[in-house]
Amino acid sequence: MARDRSKQRYTGKPVAALIACASVLLFSASYSAPSDLLGSKAPDFVLRSVADGNVRLSEYRSDVVVLNFWSDWCGKCSHLLPVLNNLKAQHENAGLRVIAIDVNGEARSATQAVKELGIDFPLLLDERQQVSRTYDLPRLPVTLLIDREGTVRFVQQGATGEDIAKLTAEVAAVVAQ
Image (cartoon, rainbow, N blue to C red):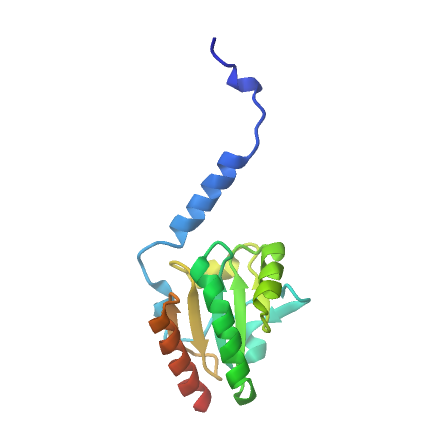
């Protein structure tokens, strides 16, 4: 006997899976648009922080900023956040600031990451993915280094040991200027 599918209850799981797959495909594209920002001013934005209030990138002019785009579904992203925390602690007195943007914009997962990883810098929520679209992210994690004048000096995709060593060296060089 054939089942009448019109009476089955919809659980939403297929749609959620489809959205998750689409997100992975979006961030797995093989182009490198953020590198086009090298040498140009970092686009300004305002996003809500998981801690409280809004954060505007331009408020950090005169500081060196590490801007990281991440998501809780990205294992490499979560691996990179404690490294960024250490960089901040190491260079904070020299004017280094770190900002991470959760591209999913989910307060619950971002708040949990702050607690579990001991993050000591602003974690922002890109709830409508407007900032992610502005920065045209090809995949995650993406980290930008922005100098004191607001110019993008370094762009990195990934979080391998080699990537982390290169980021650490770039941060030290820009902070020293």
